Every structure is written in structure tokens, then in C-alpha cells.
Length: 328
Image (cartoon, rainbow, N blue to C red; front, side, top):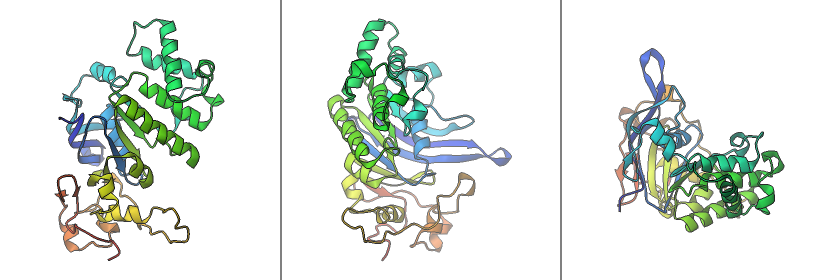
């Protein structure tokens, strides 16, 4: 079966100095099957959110998709006219952002905002029917007493309830693909678990595919079927979730795993990856991770590594792979 989403050689860039361009997403290849979840992980500045905005056709100007293809259900999106992309966005591809208070309009009730999302794609629907749809959407995401809360304003809801409203809006037209960009970052641990459980339940009920963007490896482990690790605009490792966290092959992935806290290991000292993700204007030569890599050698500087396959479903962008331990 063909994948629902197929990204090939995607390059998203912004104008640089002297007429050049700075790529913030650079040569990304990914695929996502119907009903499956792919997790996108990496530090801030790795290009995760810009990848999602590229899929949605929402790259902020003067940025643009400079190369590559994004095929959704067989349709090439990068060359789709704007009216056609607007019709697709929200109806078949929807997105949840990480901070609901910046996405919800404080001057309008949550019901009005859900109704607006539905009416944008179903203009002939009667007002009473739209209100019933909005109440049903709130009920679907487990908002208590939705017939009453539909007339509340965003400030009258808790952070977890606002995120549920955002999920209700995103799913109001039953999309085939949901992009969730750090959907639980602003929430406490208990509410985070509730939201993630809700997303998994809704995915089972609807059969939608999901792209989950997160810096939290634990979240990705629990939610994703496949994981893509991004660094400096590139995918540096791709593997099934269970394989990635037991048999990682890229030093960056190993560093992320080593720096993640583990349950029951409160006294254990966490390792840190020294340095930071390079800016698009200051990409190092060769392997982009080599300035921070404990295993770097002169050959890593001389040439940029290509993705190398390690079995049918795993690949890593490292000339030293396979690697058993970054500390070895």
C-alpha cells in the first residue's frame, strides 16, 4: 500500500546574504502510512517545526520550499495552487500547536472558533447543525458538560482543557493526517499523560495518521511506530521506535537517549551533549554533528555522510555506524 504521506528530498530555505539561501530543512526523506504515527525528535533549532509547516503549506515568508516533493495521498503539495491547499488544510491535514493560548482567539468563544473551522470547509451546513457538530467535537475530546462549555472563552478553561479544544478543532473535519507540534510542552506531567492518552484513543477511533513532534524521547517511545531524529535540518537517524531506543546507530541519538532521565534512577548523573545546534548560517563542513561528537575523526570533517541502511527499516547518517555506545 502506498504511504499516505511521502516526503522526498525536501529543502525549505530562507534568503541569506549575497543572494544565497539558508536551508532550515535540508534534504529530508520521510514516509508515513495510514493509521500510523511517526515521531520527529531533536533539539530546538533542528528543523522539526519547519518540517511540519512545510507539510501544511505554512512556511512563513520570505521562506519557501526550494526543492523536493511532499506527496499526500498521491497528490503533490508543493506545486498545489493556494486555493486547493487551503481546501486541503484543516479538512484532510490538520495541526495542533504547542501553546493553545496563542492559537485560540481570546475575544471569541471556543464554540465560535470550532464552528468557524467546520464552516470553512462545509459552508452549506445550517447554523444549528454547526453548533451540534461543535458540541459533539467537545464531547469527543472529553470536555465536561460540552453543551454549556461551548459558550466559554479560552481564559475560562484550564491549560489542559484549552489543549483539548485545539484537538477538537483539529479533528472537527475528520482529517486523515494530524500534525501535533509539541502538543504537551506547556502542560504539567499529569495533564500531559491525559492528552497523550486522548490522542492515542482518538487515533484508534478515527484511523488517522499522526506526525508527532517532540523533544521528549519518552513521549515518542510511547506514541510512535517510527521515529525520525533531526539535527541541523537533516534526518540523521530513522527507525522503528522500539529499535531506535535499544539499537540506536547515530552518536546524536545516543546522546539524546543518555541525556534523558529514567524512572527509578534519580541519583544517576545525566549525560549532556556539549555545545548547541548550529545556525543555518554557520553549518560546519562535513558531518553537521562532528563539532559535538565524541567519536568524530578527520574524515567526518572532510565529507558529509550519506544515510546508510541497517536493515529494511533503519538508517543513520554516520560513517562510524553501527555504534554500540557513545561512551565506548
